[in-house]
Length: 187
Ligand code: ADP
Image (cartoon, rainbow, N blue to C red; front, side, top):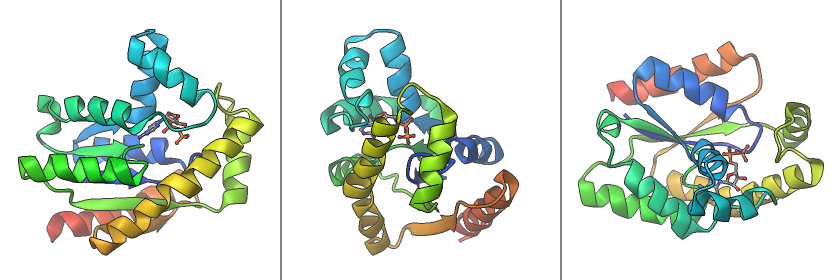
């Protein structure tokens, strides 16, 4: 199964992504984790990315697209994967489509995790990661609204989008996601 997981910062995507990849035995590709690892290892790409991340802005498309292009070629992606944090712009989505069309391996589904904005701000303020300062949080929510939300229509038009409510307990939300994914697997 090849799936894209979309949701605003603070929606609980990371928590649910870990549970999904465990259940369906697919690779977990988190661009946030990849970029933080590159930053901590002080690679040229990581240092460049940090300039954007620390402001709550998206890193440039060409940087993240190349990272994903390489990562998708790893053998562990052969049995499927969950993309967590990518694509985040229309340019990224189009680049991904082109890559997957070239290899004849289209996406099976795009999952959206929906959470009201007031709830997001509260959750993020409690988390305490380095980029969870109030003004950086605000900027990440703005980036989501302006750059990532348009992807929902893009995938809706391709009939790939399925939306799930991200409010409730971790288990309740996971069950909603599994119900959707099981129906996709069977069809
Ligand atoms: P969150 O979803 O909580 O904002 P992530 O861990 O997914 O956090 O990403 C952290 C930061 O990494 C983002 O704010 C952004 O700067 C950068 N980033 C991650 N994925 C992408 C991407 N696909 N395109 C551009 N920037 C990205």
